[in-house]
Length: 338
Image (cartoon, rainbow, N blue to C red; front, side, top):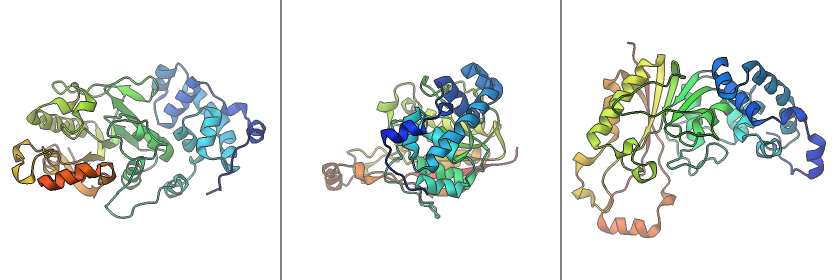
C-alpha cells in the first residue's frame, strides 16, 4: 500500500479538482448507483437520473484516485472533498480484488472460523447501540458472496453493512424502523410482528446479513417498538416468520448470516439458579432456521470483547457465581429448494 504522507495547505490547493467536489445530491446518487439501486429508485430518491450519477463517478474517480496514488489517505481525501469515507474507498478500490481491498483497508483476513475483533472500525457505520465491527461484515461478504451480488440488511442501525458493501463492491439494500435523513441508502421500514411485509424497493436477495436484538439485552436502548420488548414466545414466533419471509424473497441458493448470542437472565443470578425457561439460546435460532427451509452450513464464533467489563463488576460476578455471556455466533444458512 502507498505510504501516507502528511497533507499541507499547499498540497491541498495544488491538488484541488472541481470534478471531485460534488453536491450532496450528486454524492447520494453516486452512492446509490454504486450500491446497485435501479435507475427509477435513484431518480425517486434524488431527483437525478442514474446516467448523471455515472457521469459524476467518471469525473470524480480520476481526481480521487490521483489523490490516493499521491499518498493521501482515504480519510484525508474524504475530509478534503466532503465525501463519506466509505464512498472514497468505493472509488479507489473499485478495480481491486477482494484480497487487495482487505490489504488496503488494513484488515488481516481470518482464515479460520473464529473472528474476534477487539473494536469497531470507526471509518464504517455511525455510532449505534450494539454496533458490530465492519471487519466482521467484510469477512462474511468475502466468504459467502461475490462482487456484484445483492446484500440485504433488515435492521441497518448505524449503516455499517451498506458502508462495507460500498468498499467491497456489493449491491446493497438496507432498512431500519427509523428514518435517517443523513442516510438515504437506509429505507424506512417497520417489521410489524403481527403483519410482516416485504419492503417494496427490495427484490430478490443473494445474501442477508441480520444482526437482530438478542432478546431483552438492549431493550432499554432500542425502545418499546423494538422486538426486544416482545415476550419470549412472541419473540421466537417473530423469528420464525422472518425466516420464512426471507426464504420467499431470496434468490435460489441464497445465504442468510445471522449474528446472535445466547440470552440468559444471568444478571445478579448465580448460574445454578437460572431459569432455563427464560432463556433464548443459539439452539432456538438454529431450530427455527431449519424449520423455515434454511440449512445451516457454518457456525463461526465472533466473541464480544471482555474489555468492556469493569473489574469491580467482574469481581462481584465471580463472588456470586454469576456466569456472564461474551460468546456470539454467526450462523450461516443456505436456502433449501422450494
